[in-house]
Image (cartoon, rainbow, N blue to C red; front, side, top):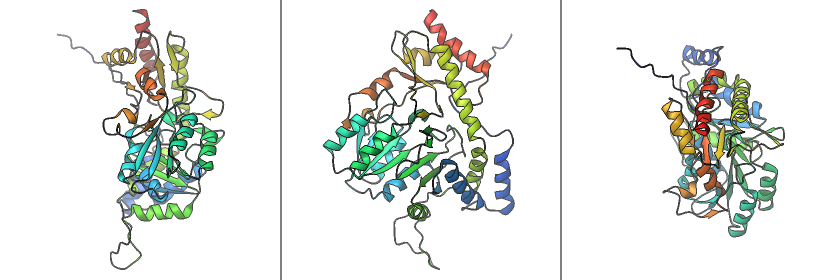
Length: 376
């Protein structure tokens, strides 16, 4: 009896190591020198090279992007009872560290122009909560938020700004890297990000003293003493030398990954953008996105669930747009400021496979399945 051949799975986004083997060179060096952990030259090198790449004065290599947000909040002086503005349309890792600090999140709506934090809703939030301690800005799916408007508002209120650029490494706003406009910026190297170190994150800032303090906190706040002495609360948040080695190798191919992500987005937009009720992620003249995940909204009879189920039948992974934080069971008790744009994007949005290892044949396969829904 002839076996049924299962089609190779097309993933949403997965690790993509360099063809040149850059990562293994750095990892081998870590093994050869026995600097596996803690720290080592790869950690120092990754901090230096990432900071130089994005144009920031200093960086701290950490165990995750979440850890980077947590330390940024501490550096910004956020503590128990403080209010922190946070975009509602994001992954929970943006909001969780606010709770770690026993602070109070207030969730801010998106706008259709950027899919990111709405300057209009942000102004309204400041009017309602003038005592806010910090503002977190997210660059969703590699799309830049409108940083000029956001920074103008935040500067008027003299509030700390933390940029969650976990999804936007390689994205520019008016020629400058996202993650470098606020007081602190964070990047993630999780397995699905545009470059990956198998995990890990980075905190960047032009305040070299605060980055030094973040490194101290991340290394269990161990004082300079012959014995183990701790005068402040510490965390086990430092990146290992092996992980940093992978990151250094990946950084060498970042520009190639951005180029491929943009190619994938343009392919989908060209092939699917003319279908009834289909709109793609917004494009602005000041935004050079890395197109981390190509996403579209469906406002016609074909719904996101139809697309996701059709793709899954063909062994192709896709995903809904992030469910807003103010709609999540854990966070729904906290205040939300906005007009419901984020909820509409969640209801109508779908993320298409955007793996940088995808071939043209893979893209054609995805497009064929989706187009078929309009023919039925």
